[in-house]
Length: 489
Image 1: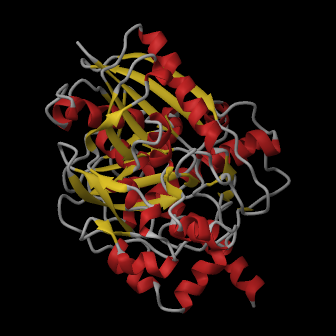
Image 2: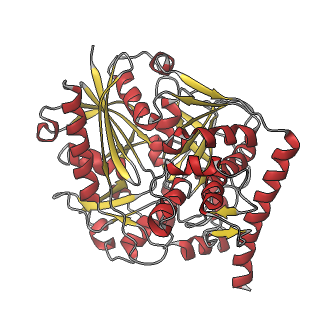
Image 3: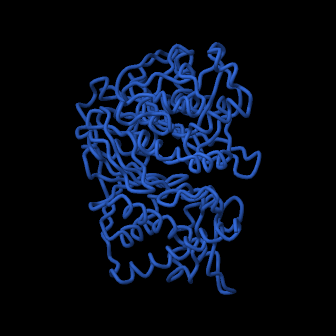
């Protein structure tokens, strides 16, 4: 029985796995990725390092599997942008990461000029530095690459496009609908680049990749990378790959991924949704990988807050330590941690807010702060779930979903069951599934997900306590928002 290589290029690392047709993971590997912070609010990565580490992880996963896969599925951090030389494939600068806030002033200008209404109508998104268009605009106009782009010497794309260009020696310049829908340049209704928005941001159409289906063969990797040419047959942005990998392919099915950020998506079928204020509409995949739609809510910092406790404050040695710390105290001792290190996402979309910790006393311990950091994820996801009008059980994945205490707390503050799969790296699984369907390994998402087993966490919290906790969280967020308003006064 054949297998698929999934390449998952994420914000903090590059993960690869080889998935057998029967659902077994035959081999996997991981490489941590460097982030650069050249100025406050700026976040960059080395595109060449991304590619090198992705290939290294893929080679190790293939070696561990002991067999050559027949296909490759690629998934990636989404709004991060790279620009490279069309001929040499050399990046012109570091990639600008989705967390980067350098274009906050430009986004504020777009709002003042009334452009956000057009962005909402065409793309389902908002004017925020999170998305790709202002990053591309900055690299062209501020960093000085506009003339080369106009002459057709450069190519730009989200990280899937960069990896695919490198894997194929520059023969392929493509992206899929899910990644294109995160750029502020993609028309959700037309399912194509929007000429009006390309003009608005000064982006030459020839700079951008061709948009292709998420499931379908787009070319072969050069043999130098993995020892043989392999068909590349699946592409999806990480959150849509996760949605697919969890089997959420029909209207109403919802998932949340706990990664560097947290991202909750509710599938909307094949109809373009009209999102409420602050909620995003985005492209997704149907049961066979065909274009579909979803509503999305985004928390820009989730697991990254735990990394901060470990790497900057030094109050924990490992992320896993937080579960025992959370269990060691009866509550967070009145502490609320709003980890708005990159601003607030859904439903506030305030890029200027910064992180706050409230309720500190002389009795506050590292256990209270660690618990507050975990609770912040649960509260934030509950806020997203309400904003997206979720009604059914929530499927979960990502690193922090391995924390049983957090998953029970999540079910409690949501008031609905939380379901966790046996393999929590479903972003990579989703990419493998999309590739495998294109190559005939599985008929559709239902057959692909059939081998997964789920653990269910049942809500056990009394409704009154749930509301009191959520009220405390909303007050903490309001305090963080008010601090920005006061500083601007």
